[in-house]
Length: 177
Image (cartoon, rainbow, N blue to C red; front, side, top):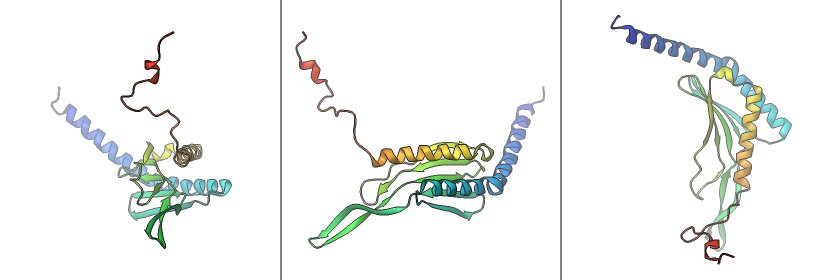
């Protein structure tokens, strides 16, 4: 057995991964990014969401397409004095498609948050895909998941009864019948 067999196998694997990275990068700009922009625009128009669709391409081979619900005054204001209040701005959330260093695509949800009112929630990763795996039905499903998360944030309440004290059930104090 050749002592280089395992090493040569790893080198072949490494070279194959580098070739895939180049393929994925070409697929982003050559097909996926236009598909994302077209599909997200269609969704925005059909659903009348008034979202902002933007792309960031300041870095070569690290692209980003964002479907943002925008920002607005949150309805909450910091009282400066008796006569003056400063509104807190609410970012309403985003669905993000980000091309990674290896050409794969990270799909994530940026939750809404109110500036100056608690810390923003950590973004939710939906998945990491090879560019050719993302088709229109996937984008629609991502949008459904995004909207479900946004609805949950906007309609937040605690449906579970709060447990207080030592998290003991109140039923423990009742006599058994």
